[in-house]
Length: 157
Image 1: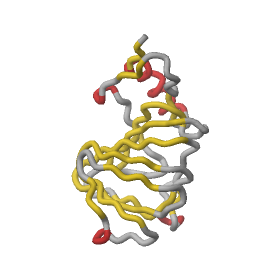
Image 2: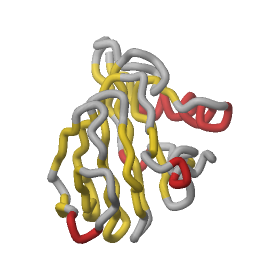
Image 3: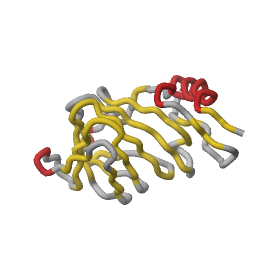
Image 4: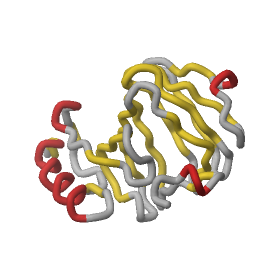
């Protein structure tokens, strides 16, 4: 039995509006098939203006698999930060300039273009920026979070 993403879209929209971002986790009952055009995009409180998120599956606050996409406007800067779990990224559109380190330095980044990927381990500091509108898919296992090395970089503060 197929579970089209279109059937999950209303749940995504409700959860984006109502509170923590989450979607139904795929549990292996048939296939989860969807279209990029059907994704529901919303703001990313932990990233501020210029970044949007679409959750494909899972709850970022639970210990379970998740898949999401992030869309960054041209020039968006991702300040040095860490995550509590492995981060697996695949660039789908645009260029994500990315680096390992505690100090933001655009000249020290590696350009990840469409189809390129990166895997970062928990607690490893990283940063980057978008060249052109950039969309990348991120998947891992929650609970997920972001901690900026400099609290002044955190838009939630």
